[in-house]
Image (cartoon, rainbow, N blue to C red):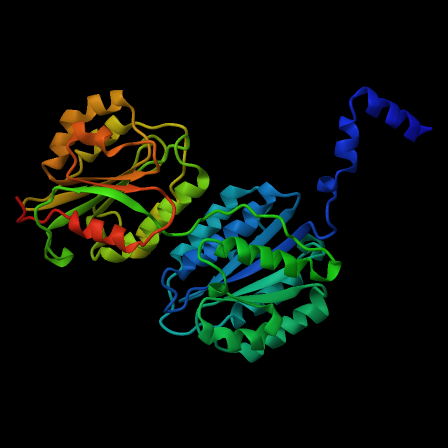
Length: 434
């Protein structure tokens, strides 16, 4: 009888109820609630791969936003010392805690040689004696990042087995390797079928593919799998240039320049979506950063001058600090190009030095241009004023009233990153350039 009334109501409401009630999209898979513990590798040769590790963690976390899943996670790191973050569990949608622990990983000093996960895995084993095992869900997994030849693998494997035998019987373990040479070590620890080599997928889809693989490993014994596209935090770190205007007459090797570098980042969420914004940050972190030799000469500012922090000269000391400061930039629905230019003009410059300004811009309005003509002229007089146009909302001709030194256009798709590096080097204002 209840079913009869259901179909009557369904008919009256044009069956919209039945669509939602019977649709497969509302079926929640058994393994929808899962937990992952990530071991981050900050060994001596980690380089920019620490950001690959973080992006994988982020994509695992943000999967909760895009699917009917609950992703709980913890991540720890081994570098010059061990960082266990008290094995705190980050709850789904708790982005503030995620960012807090990401900063801790970024600040963790890199080791002088190879590392070992033995201390951390022992700490986790001991931690489980005090923890409520229910918080780790019925689908826990440990993810080991390999960016070096890890020491003490036999002992790590023994403790891992003790965790499975005595604490979390359902826990699985997998490894992500960034170089083929670490495959044997990873296979020894977790087994051949539980190793993912990052270069077996395209750079564009790498983070998405790795997290999808992890989720399928989590659900492997449940008879279910995750096949739907995931939320991708970071797209391919590639770019395409169109026409480039260059007016700088001469460029010198960077080490011969008495030069300051200023990066101004467009943080307006109305013109760049989340993926595009993360793309922009990763290009700067992973490519531009390697071209700078003295980070005390670098300043970072944004179009959002109210909330994002302004880093002036002398505040940034290392490449790790530079990367971290770019990483934490956030988007908001506000922009103030003219006020940004005014603030850039207040940067202190030593006598005999010049300043190369790089403005990454995705949108600008005519009234902002009109208000900024005089101030951009002053800024340009201090060295070079270089614009990098993101997307297709701005034409190079739109910027002509500002008389930039150089303009580089990206369409945010695919090409060689070498063009960006060449543009950057050719746009540096040296103290002997007229």
